[in-house]
Image (cartoon, rainbow, N blue to C red; front, top):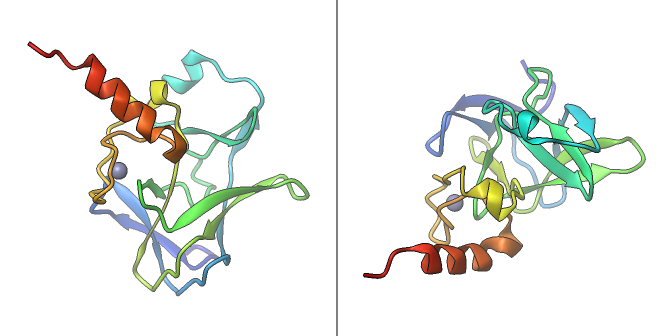
Length: 154
Ligand SMILES: [Zn+2]
């Protein structure tokens, strides 16, 4: 049992997802996103497919794949209802509700991947604005341009 108001179960998005076992209001802390952090990552580390390195603040990367991370199954969505916030004081990253969340809602956030990373990670969030790949929201217009111009046009 998680000490937080969340549980992991099968998700309509992909694999296991993180679901609310209570309601959360906007701005409320949901669960910490725990894991090993590093200021340097290399391609050998990101190539481990079960490992999701997230840039939790500029130049600081976190591997949230550990079983000790109560929020590790949170899926990416192009229209998420939470965000990952790094607290400088505690050196912890937390999922914070950005929309009202009801019991049994799936909790999602923007993984914030670069376009280069996102091209290897299709998105299955099924939101109307889905970019088709897991890419940080500010980069999605550039991703769409990239996909349009890299498609063969014969
Ligand atoms: Zn999507």
